[in-house]
Image (cartoon, rainbow, N blue to C red; front, side):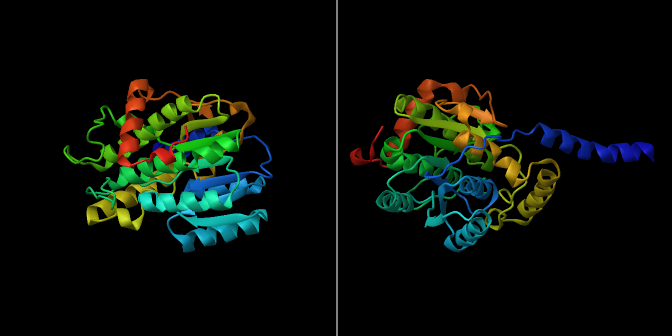
Length: 325
């Protein structure tokens, strides 16, 4: 009986230790007069990031696919913070949507001080291609944010000091090799984890190269791992296409919620990189639990980062008039 009780307590104690060690943003910095954009802000850590920035006085733009869902979130944040929150439609998997969003923001906003590239999907069971011919996971997690950031870069530079925050993942360690000639899995076999891990590696490599291009501009860019977070990220209905996948997601969701962070804790490193005084001027780094962390060897390859940038420019068809670095 004692042994059974002790074993039952192990998961509880493990969760307590993990949450106790989790990083928290302690900065009390005000963002009054600042404008922030958070992609994928209608749920999870994106929602909590947006709420925190609004609470600090920033004008926050929720950049989301689902306008109705985002509007409900905006009203909730407004009721809690009393601050202005704006909803704009953005589907990072659709390059036309990205360009339309950027055009509208540049038309209505004279300054952008914070850009949090948070939107993402874990990947589909089978390979899907967007209207632009890009693999869906890569398009949503990497290409869309790559294009968005480039389109907003001039305004971010004009608003300096400003910050770009890219939500990556520890899953980038899953990618042991990367084929820059086949980023969209047209020739090699597709796998959900392979696509997701590669997209998260690209988030870091993008951050590294962009930080290099922006040195001296007053704009910083950093990537982060939010931690194991108990949100609906891996349990969205559109991702559960077969019965066994649904079962896997139910079990996985239970384990994550048992051991993982909630959305508030999961958002802490994003918030930290967006506001903390101690990372002012810090750029091209990777963070976990509000501390600088070590990436995989691939994520530190400067040549790879530069070449990925060139390939990404071609894949999103970045025009000369859209280049501001």
